Image (cartoon, rainbow, N blue to C red; front, side, top):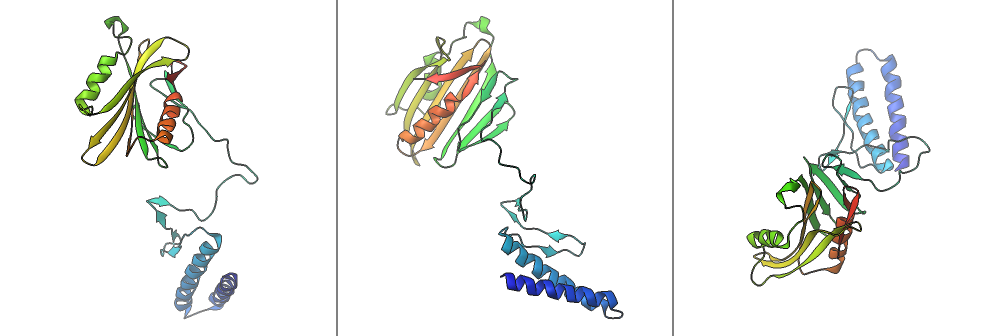
Length: 239
């Protein structure tokens, strides 16, 4: 491969030399140069392992390939001698009242104030939806019946296997309820984890789902993800 690259490079030099002293046939040599340069850039991309095919566009620039609608650059861009940054990050949302410090393996997408999360390896998807509430209404603590009514309205059937547990914020008293439900659908079994929490005037609901039978590994990453979310500086705790 390197010999081929060297040969193409020498051929390019030869054509450039001819172009410098050429007269009437300069257009023919320009075409030859363009073709050789294309081949040279293509082989160079393969040697560099970038997988990018450079193609002359006639404008002095090269057309680069894309993968999944993303431009593939022929090399790394960064400060010379620098090292990779520290893994991990924190997302602050809902006007700063809520934070999420997700474990590794999760993709996060923010749409308005809602955070959509997805774990590709375990095929688990979920969402966190923050909000506000008037505490004077007397609904400052989430009620199990409220969550039951929500689940019954959408996916809890008579033969569904479901449980409810309390949610705490930090070391505080009960501040919400978590629901777990296994349901049968026309496409198979679906496992659902959802919850609702309040802290003063801030509210939070979340829903996580995955297909197939109940799986402890999936349940563990869901629990860890929920625990990575804080409301008013207090981490969510489920039992």
